[in-house]
Image 1: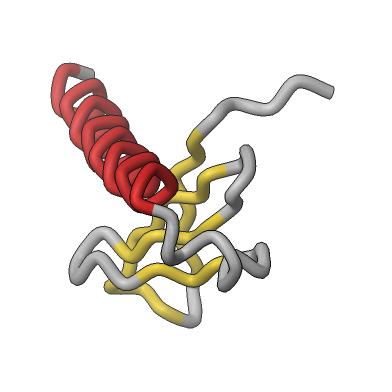
Image 2 (image 1 turned 180 degrees about the horizontal axis):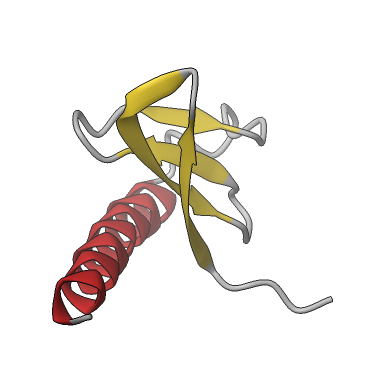
Length: 77
């Protein structure tokens, strides 16, 4: 099954929270409100790698851009 790179996620137990789920490696859940990240991979070995850190920063920016685009498309409806 092909999955989108990012998904918007919410949950009724946390009605004020909106998350972005990144489905590719490294998989993570990003809290849009405060940028907290929950990792689904063990990335401790790669955290010291400057290139990997740059990649993570880019992925977080892409996730937030995705969220902004999704919210803008809802406003248009």
